[in-house]
Image 1 (cartoon, one colour):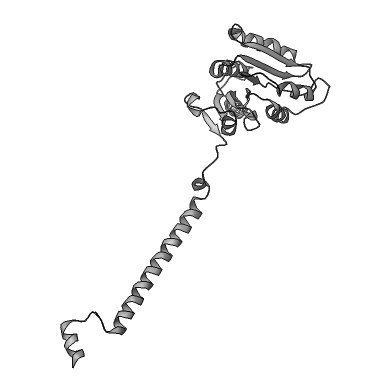
Image 2 (cartoon, rainbow, N blue to C red; image 1 turned 180 degrees about the vertical axis):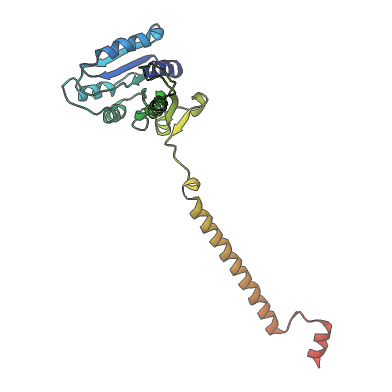
Length: 239
């Protein structure tokens, strides 16, 4: 369900002409069939390319020479065409870095590792829902027999750095989108330090101004001009 939602979001929102789908290892053919079903709605206006069974280096080479108006949709990759074992979250970093087109995915764990984002499935949200169900079963409020339930755990999630990399405006994102890894301004990063330094400068400026006033008054008193005395004090001083 998460992959299907993400697939349709990617195709509908980004309006590409070509979608490169993959990669898969040699034993993940069933995902290809599912992807073709998910994307069948767009087959009339999009060209599809499924990159499967390639050694990782060959895959990266293919992705680095994609034509304009292309999107890459990363699924998962545990083993490449050469039989090398890979960690999917590490493979996606290499895929997105090599691709000359935006890379999307369907899992939130890939956000921050090179994909732009999209309507991703949240593994942490799945875990929370499973824990809730387990607690209800233990408390006796839920039937202990095996059940199949579908809970909406997808969310619109994007990596700010990838939006900047590919020139994707935040105004084009749907309402309710979460943006991660946004670069904070100097004010946001160093607000306490900036306030402390500003206060110190103002205090120093005030102290300098007070010292200048005192010096000016002392000089005026020494020269005997325009010293502030009352009339009675002036008469006593004259005598």
